[in-house]
Length: 106
Image 1 (tube, rainbow, N blue to C red):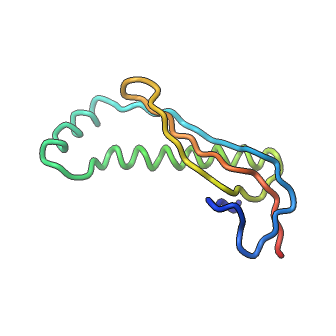
Image 2 (image 1 turned 90 degrees about the horizontal axis):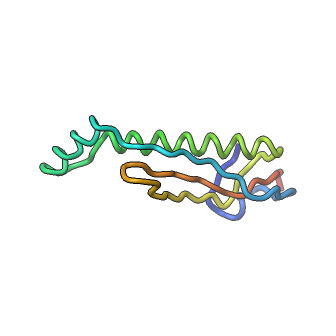
């Protein structure tokens, strides 16, 4: 599966456009991470547990978007974007979306 954040793919021609596909996940923080984050906030620096959690969330959302695209017969997703939304105190949604297409060599 080709995934790009541009409208076109160099060297490829879009033959069929299926439309919007998306993947999302909602994650909440946990007490252990929050306690460590408070300490890290005092001394400064990266909060590795949150960085890891966000990376895992992005990967999961992308995997779900790919499943959505494969279900309609796409072999690529163009114009991919990410968005986040706060769902409640301590929980956020990460969504990735794009346009499912079939592309072929030019």
